[in-house]
Length: 220
Image (cartoon, rainbow, N blue to C red; front, side, top):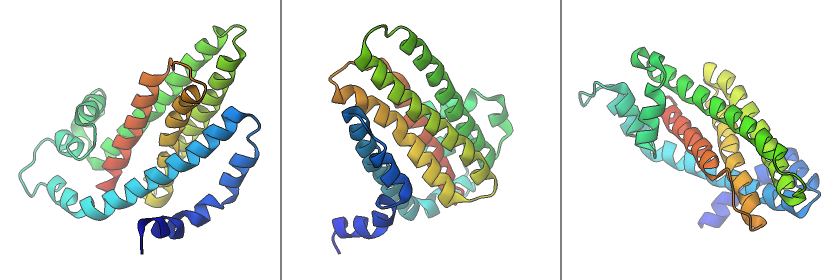
């Protein structure tokens, strides 16, 4: 079976789901349609990434975190299995609770940091919109970005409960979707050939979500 067929079998129900159909049908402007389509594509890529990483990395990672190789620093050991080691270590150690946390505690910290970053970006978006003046195109993109970040932070907040009850499938879906929201925001500027004032914040949000997903892979 080739990769295209496999992806169709795995994700065709998701693509045809009510939420995705609603997302596309409710898009009225070219910006909204482009961002909605891009968001669906990014969501599928994120889910594929999580499936592959869970299948091939899960066992060896759990053995290392368990201390089989004499690892003492849980934060460094955990972040070593993320794509963004330095950012992971810096983010986790910024919270004093991380020094005495177990793996579940580190996952909670990573998730809360992601939520905080999303909230800060929403505040920044509010300032940008107030300074947009009569630039209707910029105002439109910023409004779309605001909607994306509202949805993203809400998904992350729902993921807190999913993590608490160890509902890993729901948690991964929620965070993977949130992870694409910043990418969708950035894409909106590219579609309109506009420079994005949110590139750094969008990249940081996506990376923080990725770090959290990598940490939770060790728990599943």
